[in-house]
Length: 132
Image (cartoon, rainbow, N blue to C red; front, side, top):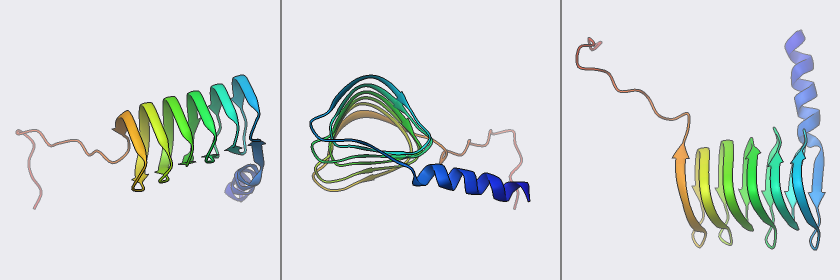
C-alpha cells in the first residue's frame, strides 16, 4: 500500500522534462528531480535522480550525476551514472566515468578512465569451502 504511492511519485518526477536549449550557456550547479535534455552548454555540475540526454551539439563541462545517461554530444569532466550510460556514434567523452553498465556505438570517442559498478563479485579466498 505504501510502496504504490512511492512508485507513483518517482514516476511522476521521471516524466518531468527539463531542457537547456541550443545556444544557451549556463554556469553553475543544477539539481532537479526530473529528466534533463542538454542541447546547449553547461559549465558546472548537474545532479538528478532521472535520465540525462546530451543531444548532438550539447556540452557539459564539469560533473554529472544521474540514474541513466544517453550522450550524443560532448562531455568533459566526471560522469557518475548509476545504471546505463549509452554513447551514440557522435558522442565525445573525456575525463572520468563511473557507470553501472556501458553501451558504446561505433564512432563514439571515449577518452576516459572507466570504472564499472555493481557487476563485480568478490573472489573466494583459498581457505573458504566451495559448495558443490
